[in-house]
Image 1 (tube, helix red, strand yellow):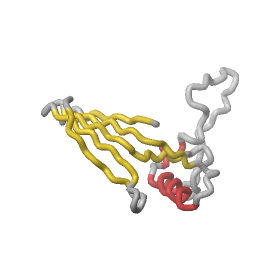
Image 2: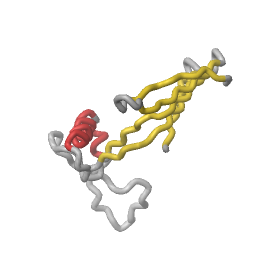
Image 3: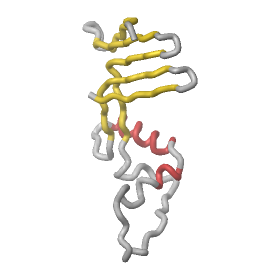
Image 4: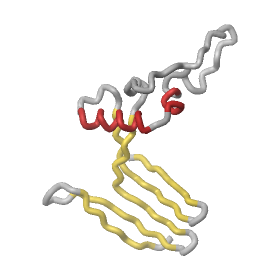
Length: 126
């Protein structure tokens, strides 16, 4: 289970979203998910894509190695192997508005009839 959190300073709203993360990499056998990965790749800027071709982040470069060259990328080429798409499947959302002092939790469950997600909300004390 993972949690992401957003806080909006102008509205004083905070969202905590809990759920499962699905990792879609180049070895995923599902063609629909691979298509989502490719769409996410092409929706990002060339500059963003270039980050997946550079040296490892936080690695200390060798003083002897002066051969580093800026990577190049064919803008029409599909996703590189290092690119993974993370898809969050939310199961619970906690909404807090600090300005109005209002808090609502949203929880999901699968319907026994058709397997679709059903969401319920509960207003609770902040």
